[in-house]
Amino acid sequence: MARTGRKLWRVWVVGVALAASGAASAADAELLNASYDVARDFYRDLNPAFIAQYRADTGKAITIDQSHGGSSKQARAVVDGLEADVVTMNNPLDIDQVAKAGLIAPAWAGRLPNASAPSWSPILFLVRKGNPKKIKDWGDLVRPGVAVILPNPKTSGNGRYSYLAGWEWAKRANGGNDAAGEAYVRKLFANVPVLDTGGRGASTTFTQRGIGDVLLTFENEIALLRAELGASDYEVVVPSLTVRADNPVAVVDKVAAKHGTTALATAYLKYHYTPAAQEIFAKNYLRPVDDAVLQRHGTTFPKLNTFRVDAAFGSWPEAQKKHFADGGVFDRIYTAR
Image 1 (tube, rainbow, N blue to C red):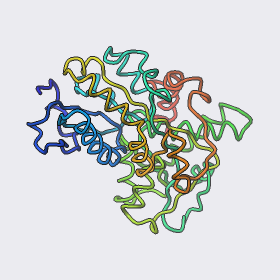
Image 2: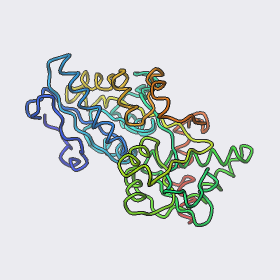
Image 3: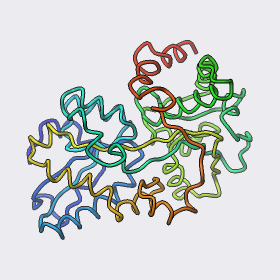
Image 4: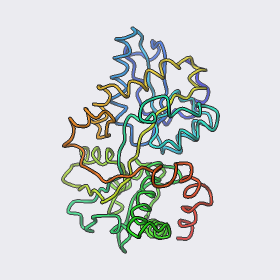
């Protein structure tokens, strides 16, 4: 299947052209999923399961490629010509960006349950063995001498969630005062030595380059890092308040129609809600939206005090305009460092 723009972005594809029949050339159809940075491991598990199920149901062999990067960077890539059939992001704002470009129907969030978000994950803290800086909550991140690692909020949903969670914590701690929120994030980013473009890059900076005292990232990324690198070398800190990051999905309507993959892309996203896929979410430390599956994994996921961005900041578009658009609060506080 010829794909305009695919070759330009092929370097981002980390999926291995998984096909139930083995050879990609023998596939009846091909999908490209443009996804956020730290979803790589999840899709390594989910894609083969869907391919096998789809072949059992239809007799057809398919291929699924993955493109990964910072969530906002991925959305921009799709707008600029990356011919993804589906997008699976870590915040709705990035899918809205693709919709505004005319590639996705504006009402995309109403197509699937839970505003088209089949999983979610909170922002937690990862510290080094023994927690040498004694980090327990958001207030500790702005102490002198504490180096905080998180990705750039301009290019990463992960970074935006961390920024907004810190702002909301400080605001609530000071009687609902927005000025306290701004003062807090100003101090927070003064303690950030490196701004990677995506969550996986931030994880690499913290774990492989050894930079920083604490990493702010999604719960599933923390769990996978500890499993890969050794749980005894790192400790998890659950803050007193954190943000719920729902992970929305959508068919890229214009691209899928061009490729003739609309039905397949829709089936792929609906599969995310099946009990089998919800189990795969839980296995990869993403919180499933199926309550029965979540309860079966109750020991994996600690109880949290969370908020949603829409509830605390009016809406994602409002938060984007105020905080992350060019000339917004983040630009003001970061350029003033």
